[in-house]
Every structure is written in structure tokens, then in C-alpha cells.
Image 1 (cartoon, rainbow, N blue to C red):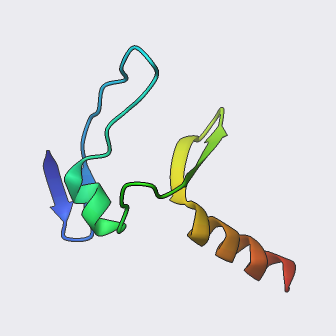
Image 2 (image 1 turned 90 degrees about the vertical axis):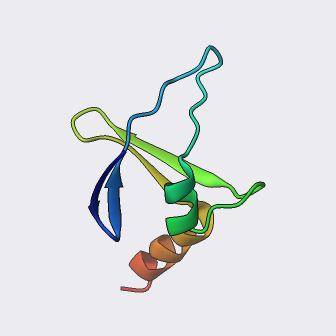
Image 3 (image 1 turned 60 degrees about the vertical axis):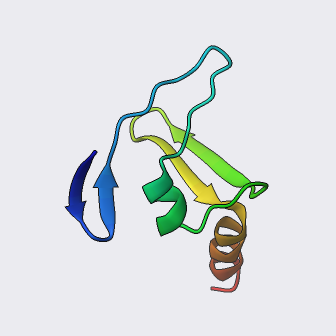
Length: 67
């Protein structure tokens, strides 16, 4: 794992037979991801994939609606 700054990291993960990946412990700690949490997977053909905790996703969506 290459550490960039204390609030960032870069790591490669391998996709398993069932299409699953493992989120590295550093990422789980940084974003407080625990067993049973729900993540949103967002994709854009040009920009790639992004993961976001569902509670944060809905919080961002709520802020957007109130503008």
C-alpha cells in the first residue's frame, strides 16, 4: 500500500470469482465502515466507480433537494 497523506491512500484490490472486493482495513477505519453497513456503488463510464456509505449518500441528496 502506498500512503499518500494521512487522509488518503492508494491500494489495489483483486476482484474475486463472485465479483467481490475486500475494502482494506485502512479504508474501513478511515471511513468508519463496519460489518453490516450499506454502501452505495456509483458508476460513470468516463469517471469510473465510487463507493459511499449510504447514510452519507442520502445526507448529500437531502442537501441537494433543499437548494
